[in-house]
Length: 124
Ligand SMILES: Nc1ccn([C@H]2C[C@H](O)[C@@H](COP(=O)(O)OP(=O)(O)OP(=O)(O)O)O2)c(=O)n1
Image (cartoon, rainbow, N blue to C red; front, side, top):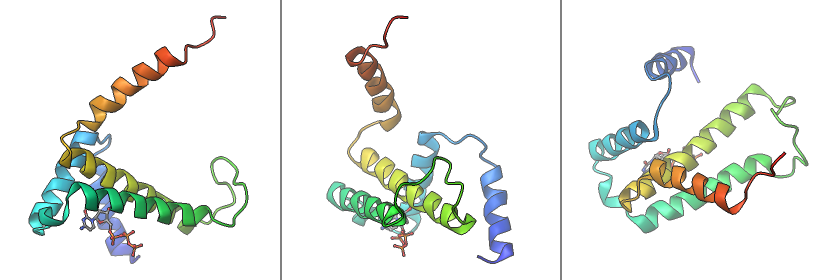
């Protein structure tokens, strides 16, 4: 990517130091509205989009064998690509949740509480 574009992206990102799911959700809705893409964002289409992006994410790891934590031997460009595909999965998942009327942040917090009850930590 050219330096100027990269600089513009970094400037935009610096404005939002600790983004919330709600903020991402608002930005995604704005993005879809501005392009008249709400018509394509049905639950089924968004679910297929999530699955497609998970496939693209899997492709990055395909045939590499086991990968060390932190990806110490990866090129910066490969790590950037990984960040993009992880983001695509997250963004479509947030969009899918929204369009289904599920508050993903709240649902995830509840699920963490349920997980802790189901799998209690060992008393030391
Ligand atoms: N109808 C659409 C199409 C795209 N997007 C947004 C959400 C994703 O973050 C990103 C996906 O864009 P692409 O379909 O171009 O997928 P990639 O970025 O993965 O490109 P490629 O498949 O060429 O690698 O764009 C969206 O919200 N609604």
